[in-house]
Amino acid sequence: MEYEQQFSNLIYEYLLKRLQFGYYVYGDILPTAEVLCREFNVSDHTIWAALRRLRAEGYITMKNGQSTKVIYKQTEQERQNNLIDFFSERWNAYQDLYEAAELACMPLMIEGLRRMDEQEKNYIEKLSKRANADDIILFYCYTLQKIDNPLLMNLFWEISLFLGFPFSKSGSPFHYDRRIGQKQFKVLVALIKAGSWDLLQQTLIKYQRYYIGETIKYMQPQIRKVPTENQIPFAWRIYRDRPQICYNLASLLLHEIYMGEYRNTEFLPSYEKMAEKYKVSVSTMRRTIRMLNQIGAAKSINGKGTRVFTIGERCSRPDFTCPVVRRNLSFFIQSFELFFHTYESVSQRFIQSLDEAEREGLIARFEENQRTGLCEISIWHYLLFIVKYSHSQAIRQIYGIIYSLFLWGYPLKASLEEAPITEQNGELFTASMIKGLREHDIEHCVSVTKSYIKKQLPMGTEFLIQSGIKPEDMRLSPSIRLLLLHDEE
Image 1 (cartoon, rainbow, N blue to C red):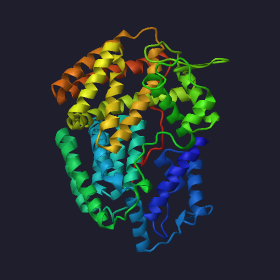
Image 2 (image 1 turned 180 degrees about the vertical axis):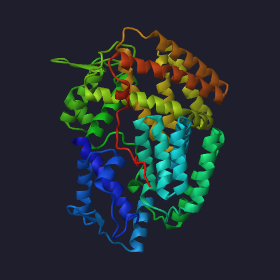
Image 3 (image 1 turned 90 degrees about the horizontal axis):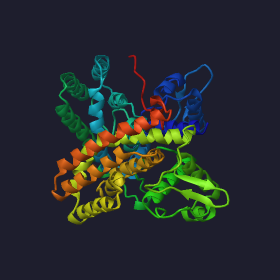
Image 4 (image 1 turned 120 degrees about the vertical axis):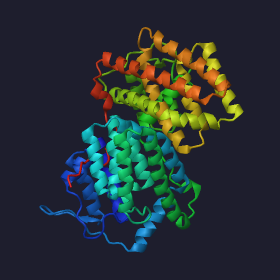
C-alpha cells in the first residue's frame, strides 16, 4: 500500500507535466487505465489514484463507461510559462546531468542492443518506421530493459523526468522532426544489424547531442534567474517518501561504522542521542537501527545498547527472510552491475581530471589499506574519491548511491567464516591501482578495475544463491518502469 501511494504520486506528476507541457490538450482522450497499467507495470488501483487526483484538480473528467477526457485549458503563453518555469528551476543541473547520462547510460544502451535477438531487433526496426517522438523514449527504455536491472530502469526514469523528455511531443522546446527521426532511426537499425557497436555508440551520441543542443539553444534566452537555493538539483531516488529517510540514514550509519566516526566504536550512542544528532525522531532511529540488525551490521543487546561490527570483524548473518534485507541485497547486486557497465567512461574522465594532489591522496589511501590489511575496501575508497572529486554533480550523485548500496553487501561477506579469495583480489586491485596511478596510466587503472569487478560480482551472486536467495529475487524493482508497452499500431 505504501509503495502504491508513492507510485501513484509519480504517475500523477508524469501525467500532470504532460498536460502542462501540451502533450495532452483540451478534448484529448487519455489512454485507458488498462493501457496505463501495462505501460507503468502497476495495479489499476495505483492508476486510478493518480487519475482521481487529476480529476479533483480540474485537469480531467472521468465518468463510468466513458473515456477519460482532458478538460484542462491553457493558452500558448501559459504553456510557455510552464516550460520556462520547469527548465529555469533545473537549469544549473541540466547540461551536467545530460553529460553524465551520456557517460553512464550510453555503454548500457550498447550492451542492451548487443543482447537483442532477431525478433527484438525487428521491433526496433518497427519503431524506426513509425518514429514518433515517444518512440525515441520507447527505444531507449526497450533497449535498457535487456540489461535486466531494475535499478538501471529507475535511474533512466529519474534522468528522463528531470530532463523533461517524456512530457512533450514535437513542439518546443524539443522540435522533433519525424522525417529526420526516421532517417536517424534507419541509420541506427543498419548499424545494429551489422553489429557495428563502436560506430553505433558514436552515432547515438551524435544524435543525442544534436537534440539536447537544440533544446538548450531554444531555452537559453528564455531562462529566468532562479536563486541557487531554489534550484532543483538532480537526485536519484531509489526509495521515496518516508522509507527514503530510514534507508538513507541506514546507509550513512553503515558508512560511519565501516569508514567513519563509529569505525573504532564498539557500541553506538543511545537512540535519543543519535536521533538528536541526525535530526530525526527516536522512532525513525529505532527503525533504522533495526535495519542494521537485520542486515547483520549491528546487534542490539538489552541493557547494553547496539553493538556494531566494523571492518574485519565477523558479523551476524543477515536475516534473509526480511524484505528489507532481500531488497537491499538485490540493490547491492544491481549496483555492482551498474558500476561494471559504466565505470570505464566515468573512470577515464575522472582519473584524467585528477590534479597531482588528488592523485597522491588516492595513492596514499590505497597504501594505507596495504599497511593495515584492509585492501578489500579499496574499491570503496575509489568510489568515494569519485563522489568527492568528480567535476560532475550528477556523477557524484549516481556514484554516491552506488557506493551506499555497496555497503549493504559487506555483512554478507563478513558473516562468513572466511573469504580469502575476495581479500586476495582486493590486495591485487590495490597494488595494481597504485602502479597505474603513479605511472599516470589511465587504461591500466580502467583494466584493473574491470578485472576486479568481474571477479567480485559472481561471488556476491553466489553467496546470495547459497543463502537461499533466488536469481529472480535479485531483480526486485525499486520503482515503476516507464513506457513498457509494445504498441500494436
